Length: 313
Image (cartoon, rainbow, N blue to C red; front, side):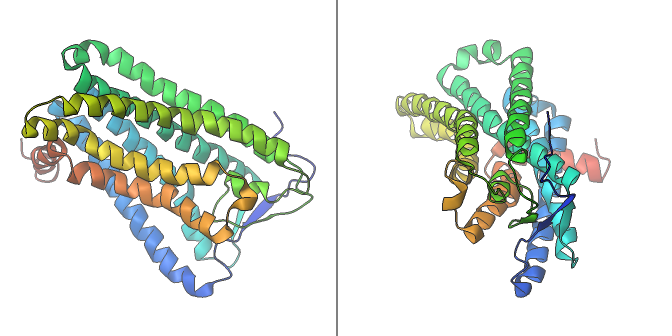
């Protein structure tokens, strides 16, 4: 597999918002603050889900995977973005761009698949509670998580190969903060429609199929919840899915906007803002959503944090 072609530069220049000097410092502060919150929030979720035996369930196993994913997702791009904002020369090596593209695509696709798996977990919990332990057993959960990660990395390699092998005729100015498919396609000096069609096909597989399965799962969940007679029972059943629905809406809404339309139709500044949202803001919000809206997580924090910080048993 040839990751470079004869028109590949040794490095790319990441323009970002370099034409707006007044934005550099506010952007640096926002990125640094978001990244700090992301690290603290996701590490906290991972520690609580690992250390509290009451959270050793399929739902929190997948949530731990999501936190690991979000932590890696932001680390792929944000540290380099912070360095570039503070430097006059805003560059990334060709090898660094390839690595960033593959990892960013892979982690994004993993989140798509993992959110679908988590919706299936909620479907079984609400619609088939008596069979939950049998269906969502340890090995099944492990296989579903492994399937999500491996399938996503396979998809990433294919999409990255298609993107990186387009002729660029020496063009090296990427009008973005990091190496992402739509921005790299705009460097091409040839017709990209055939490549765009192939990339669209893979994006449909990774984005639309999982979101369709999520909608089907929540359709069955809604039917089951409406059959519950007591308002308290309906609220409890809905509460187990509420956080997940918010996370799905935030992530899929922006990712579908970015990847299921031609790069030429995307406003360059708006595209950058959307990428910042699903690549940085969403991973920061995920642990906040799950911790603030989930009673089990909040109670686990109260049990686990004193043991960590004050060595209490």
